[in-house]
Length: 316
Image (tube, rainbow, N blue to C red; front, side):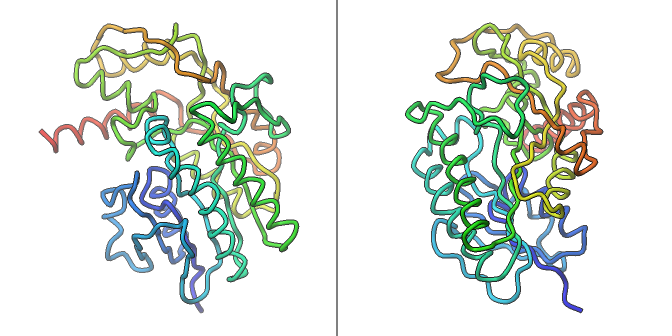
């Protein structure tokens, strides 16, 4: 009997690599496609030689050819941190538009189920709190963050068009702030930024007055939610994230305490269009998928801090 086969675009990224691990553990063959623009071979090198794993360095904004049967296409390719998509605005827009089109085309050609990795950023700077899937968002399409926000909003529209017009079996997961091992230390997201700064004995940089809120989900929980969406019968978007909300300043103080290094906090101007609040309404995931986060924030942070300590030690 042939094994189920999945294609993961952006598979050498933070979330993509954890997803490759999980799908292989489920007994699938996995074709990991990544152009390594923001991904890293280090995230998947432990899988080289593993039965059923294949890596292809490729830009998915071009036509995607995968020989043989494909059962699932999971589209995770995209710059996903503020530093990345502000430095790579055109590439971000292209992978959200052309890349999504090509990945959907592969799914259509193979008769495969397609899952889009969307984001809470489709809600923009929300006027509804917490954010349910029914909320349409408050996004500035011409602001600097619009290249990511609108790329993902377009990719959702393209995904739904393929579902309605071509009958492709599609799933959309809106991913909220996720953290864990394999994040890049200086990728601009708050968790790796704070941990890296505290471990280096540097001041913590907090934008604005730190009163803006975020909610953080550990990567193991996030991947579990994504897999449940993949195997579900829900064709509309599903929020997957942790509804436990805290201010950025509270989070900075938590990192200082867990690392045990009381570095000072420096306040800097708030970036343009930075969301003031971010908290998922996960009622749909709870009721339809039986999913909710299990790993407590501090436990997840301890694991992540351990990863960054080991990384620093290896590079010393």
